[in-house]
Structure formats: C-alpha cells, structure tokens
Image 1 (tube, rainbow, N blue to C red):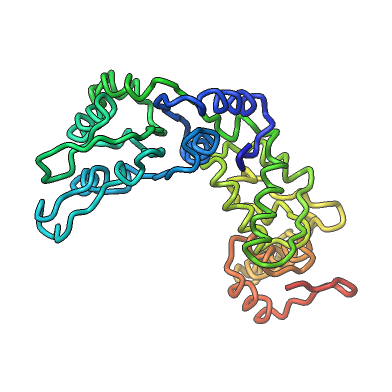
Image 2 (image 1 turned 30 degrees about the vertical axis):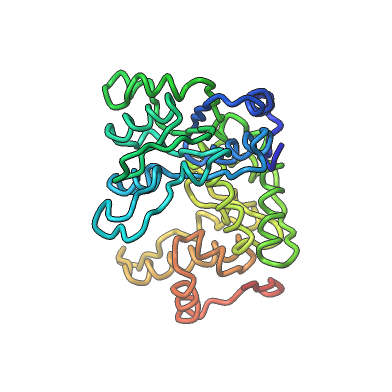
Length: 336
C-alpha cells in the first residue's frame, strides 16, 4: 500500500485504519519506535486523502534548534530578528490546503507547544515579528517515538495539546513484531539497491540467515534492515553467510565448522622438550597460524570474510599471511 511493505496482521490492520482516516480531515498522531517508517505512514495518509494534489511538508521538530523552529514553522517578517533580511513564509503557510507532518513532536519546547495548541484550535499562525495572524487550512499529522502520555504525567508535555493531537492515534509496529515481513522487505530493499547501483543484484539469504534475523531484536527497525541489506550487496558474495553479518546479529555464534574443516584439538597440544620446558613464542606463533588457517579454510580462503571472522583488518590479515608464509591446501580455490 503506497510503497509500504507489510502482510503481517498488525500491518494489515494499520492499512485499514489509514484508509479510514485518510478521507477525513482529523489530526493524526503516529506513534512508533525510531526507524519503523512513520513518515511513510504520513505519506500514505496524504496520498489517499482529498488533499493529495496539494503540498505535503515535513518538519523534524527534533532536528531544528528551538530558537529557529518557530520561524521554520510559522515564518517571519523582515527585521523580526538579526539576519531576517526578508519576509519568509513558514512551513505551515507552505503547506496551506495540504498536509504538514510534524515529526518528533515530543521534542517541541513548552513555548512552542502553546503556539501549536492555538494553531490546532483556531487554524491561525503568527509569523515571528508580525502584528497580524494568518489563517491556514492545513491538516496536521504528528509523529513521535516517545510516550507522550508519560510525558504528560511527568509534566513535560501539555495535556491539552496531547488531546488535540491524539484525535486519531496510529501505532506502527516494530520490526520484531512483524518478522513474517522480512523476506518481502529484503526483496524490496535489494531491488532498491539494484536501481541505485545501476546493476542487477542476485543475493541469496539462506535458512540460517533468517534464523539469525528472527533471533535479533532489530532496535533500529526497518531503517536498520535497509542499511544492512545495502551493506550486504557490497560486501557479501552470491549467498549471504553468517560471517557476513555484524556480530550483534549473529548473537555471538559463528557458523558451525564441519568435521572436515574444524581444527582438531590435538593440533593445539603444547610441544614440551625432554626437560619439560617449552618455547612460549614458538607456541604462540603456532597457535596464531592455526587460528588464521582455520578462518581461511572456513571461508574458502576469502580474506575479507576470514578477516571479519577474526575481527582483523583485511590488510593486517594479508600481511600476516605473507609474513608467515601460509599457503592454502592443494586444490583449494583462493578468493578475494
């Protein structure tokens, strides 16, 4: 729906609510964790509304300094403050007859909360430095990742403004609650990467990868998944392996070594001299060699993947291989 991927029951319910609320002019409050796609929900509401041919203006209330946000929202007149050389319309005026999206409204200062309440109640704005108000016809869609009800209880957000915003509340579920959507989301982001990179991308995600994804919390939600897919299109080969994933997603578990590429425990036995002594440096060097060879064998001598498995820089690993004179086993194919 309007570019939003989701077949999970929670998303289907959200789509139904979007369709119902879009045709009305009521204020909407979208709540959800960061990275869940709250701005996409706002775009869907706007595109399905009678205002779809009018402007949709987005403002991130948390990204603009407090002393500039009022001017950004409501505009200013010439000479209103130092540097105001010309009269400038604000975002509300630019969004007239359309929709304004106020993202992270929970970060708005108490002073601006008062002015926002008047806008919602009376549909008028006051540009900074102006002596007259301006009437605006704007639909307000607000969003936040914060718990506004708790902020109201703590005295950090105006109760009257909260109820003005919370006419139609929408909740966007986090990715961990809609894991069935992972395959479709991954396909969507692969197609997006292929378009951006200008070439076809064939990247397979096996069962063990999805098992790791299903165990992961996805605190960054859809945004985190999209960034990961883009990373994998650059670093992974034709099939994604556990060693291609960040360690936090793997959960500290490396790919289980098979019986034919696992280094036997006997290989790490210390060699003692007849008098019971041993050479510490020799044993450390031997152990390091076996660690490197084990990582190389597990990854088919792919130095990029072996370096990530060992938590080394690729250049450091290559230097060690050359310095130690390590060679791949006969018949084994060396990759980049």
